[in-house]
Amino acid sequence: MRYDAIIMGVDPGSQLMGYAVIAIHKNIPQLLVMDVLKLTKEKDIYARLEMIHTKITALIAQYQPNTFAIEAPFFGKNVQSMLKLGRAQGVAIAAAMQSKLPVTEYAPKKVKQSITGNGNADKDQVWKMLQVILNITEKPQYFDATDALSVALCHYFQQKIPTSKNTSTAPKKKAKSGWGDFLAKNPERLKK
Image (cartoon, rainbow, N blue to C red):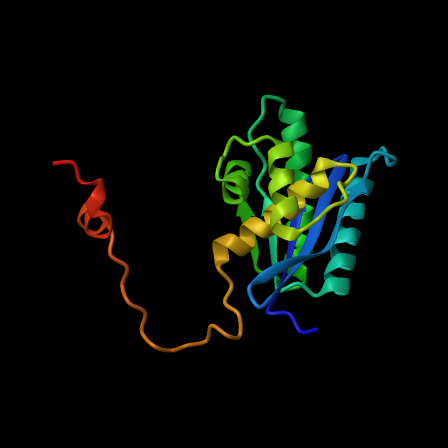
């Protein structure tokens, strides 16, 4: 099957790295893969970084994504954890750039808002929406995998990737906005 786009999403981590790949066909996203790379068996941080690079490179070779989306690290109080997370993110981004993929970062709140409409949604709420949107039944063992899937889906929603059907070159009508337009469309809402 020929897809309109393939998006890879990553939730970086120094212990678990979530990854997911979705394909877009006729404006319908579908899950190709969602899993985690377990890094805890390796004690050396540099060996973990090599594992991240190797896994991202292999996934790119296997699924041939058009674009790469990654969750931006949130700012925590533990400087050492932030340093490790930043390194993990940097290695994943470097692997994507080495493959000439455009890279986009999304803040965790932006991802949650894109999926659930609420930037403060918990991981279970995000997972339930992912199940509905992508018609998934089997729950993964780790939320890191669903986090990566939500990053990929967020990127799809943010980019509004056109399908081959949506190739019209006709000029688009400018959307009206503001109170005047709202009242014109909803005259019953005006209290007199």
